[in-house]
Image (cartoon, rainbow, N blue to C red; front, side, top):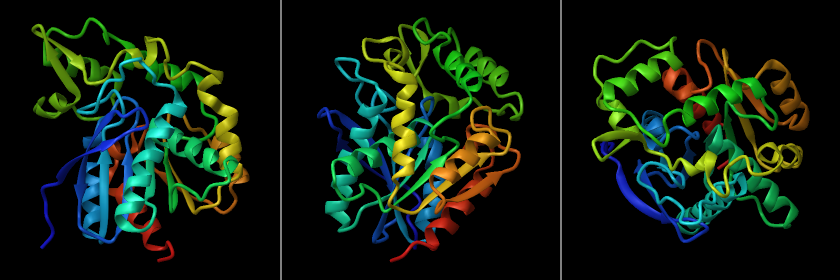
Length: 294
C-alpha cells in the first residue's frame, strides 16, 4: 500500500547549508523536484504523490533561503549557488540509489538544473542527472514577464503584511485567473510570522542582498544557452500555454539548441504550471519518465 505521508529528511547543500525535503514513494529510481523562486517544496507535493504511485522515489526540496531550509549567512543566492546545491543533493541521491536522479526544475529550479549540467560538461564529469525536466523556463525568457514576477516577490518582502487576508488579496491580484481559495490555510505554508506580521517564507536578500540571484549577466543567460546546447541527457520542456515568461520564440530556440528534447504545452496554465493545471502537468511528467531507459 502506498504511503500517503512523506518522509521528511535533511540534506546538505554546497555551503554546508541545511536543505529540508520530503520523500514520497519507495521506488528504486529517484526524482529530485526543485520549485520556483517564490515557492516551497509543497508546490510539487501533488506531483510527487503521482510519481510515487508510478513507482518512483520523489524528493521535493526547499531550496536555499526558502521554506524550512537555511537562509544563507553571507547572502549567496546567485544562480550558480542554486546549481551547486542541486549537484550536492544529486550526489547524495546517486550514492543512495546507485543511479542519478531525474531533475524536475520549475523556473529557478530549472535554471539551477541547466547550469549544473553545463558545469558537468565543461568539467568533463558525468551528467549530474538521468534526465532534465524544465518547467516553464528556457535559456532565455521574456524580460517584461520576469519583471512582473520579480516585482510581486519583492513587494513587502521586508515590511511584511498585517494579516493573512492581506496576503491573500495580494495573491489574488497577482493571479486573477485562479479562483480565490475559501481557506487561507494553504498560504501559511508560504509565510513566516514575526513580531505580529506575516512575511514571505523566502530570504528577502534573494533580490536585495549582497549576492542576489541577478548579480551577474541576467541570471547567467549565455551559460544556460551553452548548457542546453551541450545536454547529454534526455530532456523535456513543459510550458504553461499562457506563460508570462516563456514565449513561442523561446520554445523554438530551446528545441533548436536541444533537438533531442521533448515539449509539452499545458493549455490554461501560466508560469506556475503545477499550481494551475497539476493534473495535466503531473501526467506529462509521469509519461516522460515512463519512456526513459532503465
